[in-house]
Length: 148
Image (cartoon, rainbow, N blue to C red; front, side, top):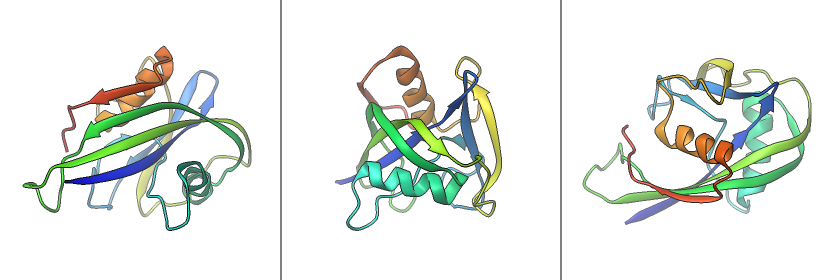
C-alpha cells in the first residue's frame, strides 16, 4: 500500500479561486486543479506549496494557513492493482506578492479564476472536495470517490 502527501494552494481574489487546467502531464490531464505538487526531499508541506506557488503561478507567499486536510483513495495510473492513498493538505494564501501567471504552460494549458459556487465540471474530484470543505469550514475529511 502506498501513501502520498500533496499540498494544494488556494488563492482567492474577489470571491474566486485560481485553478490551472492540466495538460501534457500524463496524470489527470484535461482537469482543472488548484496549484499543487510533490513534496521534495527536505521539505514539509507548507514549504512545498510555497515553492509550487512560485514555480507554477509566479507568486511569493508570505503567509498561508492550513484550512483542510483530505484523506482519499487515488487511482494509480502506473499499477491499478495496488492500493494507493493520499493526504491532500489545502493551504489558503493570506499574503503574497507578485501577479499570478501561468509559469508552467507546458503542464497547464490555461489558468482561470472560478467562483467557489460555480467550479468547472471537469475539475479534479479531490480538488473540488477540498475547495467545498474550505468553503464550509471543514478541517478534515475522508474522500473515496476519485475518478481518474
